[in-house]
Image 1 (cartoon, helix red, strand yellow):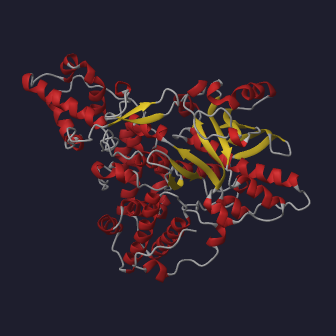
Image 2 (cartoon, helix red, strand yellow; image 1 turned 180 degrees about the horizontal axis):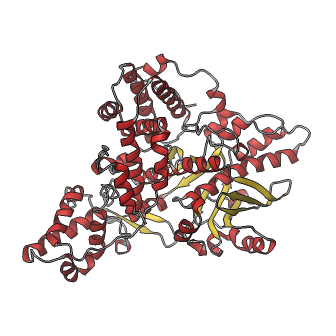
Image 3 (cartoon, rainbow, N blue to C red; image 1 turned 90 degrees about the vertical axis):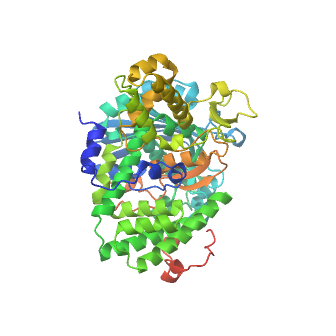
Length: 591
């Protein structure tokens, strides 16, 4: 079997392509500045569905006039047959809670292998609505739940019932009818584990493909349910929603600290994700031909990014300032285009000198958008075998050099400085959610999660130097016998030395650590947009906004839903060259 390392080496052409160094790509703040791209999981999933023309039909539709009941979709793919089962139940406003500790939801759902007969449906009905309190078998790939948007759902239903379309300006404020509060997979609660899904079901063999598919199905059901309720409310005046407005609806999501540890605990997988994105960028920088068509498409994409960012609504002052800076960066890009940039490499280097990190990473996403022929195939290599292997025969002098070369960033951190070890990560027993503690104020440090990789490396290195001074010719095996508690971090150090990326280069124990960067990095790989931080610990966002609808499967598909625009505004005046070349600090007001 070809290993990910071998695939990567062949794709890189023996390091011929200029990958950005790990010190740059794995910087925490830069990771937190990433945007969706055509390699994001939502984009690759939708491309596959549209290209392979998956057949998705509702084989059971049992909703009452209020939209409560059971719906079963059947999904026929090139490699199998699956069912998406959804239960819609009445939920009082006072019982609606988006926290993980909630026990009731407007919708609960499951993605299941094969057909669902009456007997199995009843089994699901007894367990899926309970979520964590229930149990399912390994036919189930994903469990999820969702709540209605208090601001949008009833409004949209009432508009359609009156025969009117929902106001796009209001939709832009909250671009969804439902928001997910959890999407579970990978063996939780008795479900099929990742090994089974990856090896037996090629349709969902890419990371998080099944989870993203459930969110896509939820998005389409939310639109169907709203129309169903509106039609029964006043059938004489009801009008269905226009397709272009439907596509502007996505699915809401609120992500908290629960997602952050994943990036630390799966370094080989994160290495693969980052390397494929960096390899795509390197391909474009070296092989991307720049002609008049590309220049025109680049300007059109920058225009779209400008409008999309202008239309993004956030209540967070920090993110608002970031968005305003991105608008200035886009103007600067357009001015630079007028200077007839020579090649992509020069434009990237110029951006690194003159633009914010979010502006720089937006340019990366735009560049990838221009060259699907250079980029899209890399989406097939996002899987990695996650096995950290200890090499007992490695001489300790070599191990010492590995630490000094690969983890120089950790050795350069002064962990004795004030606040450098003030934060600890733990899992709340009451809320079942990751939390941040302060070592000067909170108890429980002894139960902290092992996320301080940099500090662990520093401690390991200090003891390694001590040991090597006395036993310079010993192997790692002898060192492990003498220091058995260091086995875990040594295994990680040796395994990650075979990777280009993987370890996030930051001190996650620092007093001023910003977990938001971790959340945004993973969400950007998923493909979400319109980040709206609610604190330094959790963020709202929108999934699948602008994506094709189920009824679009089988039609012409241009894969053109990057940075989607509000339909009414999309048809109005595009920003003029004067708008984009404006150099003052005044930015457009939010829509």
